[in-house]
Image (cartoon, rainbow, N blue to C red; front, side):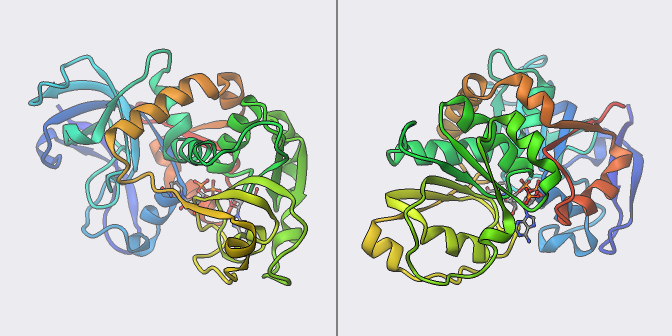
Length: 328
Ligand code: NDP
């Protein structure tokens, strides 16, 4: 039985929806009938010419996330009709991913769909939202509690940022949202932001190693000069969860905030995250992310739309989250 997939044919990024056969799928213990996938920044890279250096072989089926129903399994942990989620493990980069009606993966890479979430909601969250949750959990594990002051979210109108704003607001934090798109102010306030910070205010590199103690915590999706600047504005012993590099991979900072204010810089990786952490994060998503707000962030797309959307996300033009209905 053939199935549809978005195939990137070659390194130059040429892509189209093609019919594939199950024999074309890579090796793995579990075959999944994919229902939804999504679009993350990394998907934009995988869809671009050269695959952002992440894709090693062509033809390639991108899609770093998928959710669907198990069709066949050689692993006792999963059986046909089980609902599952996959994020990370370099799926969609080195291994064929979720931009297809069928996917095959290692059982170790899957997690069961948590009670109360649909496969569509899981993909509205996707790697971006899962990573936002990991960032919030890291800040809480390092002592962040409501009432301690504003929590900053950078790249707020993007995927990671939008989910972070909604989760933090739901948890009772005052959220300051950094955006370069003033037109997203109503959207961000709707997600729960109590303050909007124009990107230009934090765009310059460190002027003084320490500025006024302003932020009780930070989820940073931007990196670069903005992260360096934010480090000098953190309150005493506050933490920054470093999640992304939408603004750059360098870090033109000084160590002074670490030494004089005990600031913590917490690295967040979602790709190789161990199973127990994944299950804990997905459970927290089920309880801490208001589903109505999640829906407000979402736009739906088809496989055919992905090449264009992939280019848009790399330019910072996608708001919130994109859910891909692979059967449409
Ligand atoms: P999006 O493109 O959806 O969001 C990124 C946001 O960053 C944009 O919407 C924009 O927000 C802001 N931004 C873009 N360019 C710049 C710039 N030059 N300077 C300052 N701000 C900028 O991407 P995602 O949310 O999917 O991913 C965000 C980052 O997190 C990426 O770097 C991604 O690779 C990383 N990531 C890391 C993971 C991990 O495991 N550590 C997992 C998932 C993502 P606005 O318009 O509001 O200013």
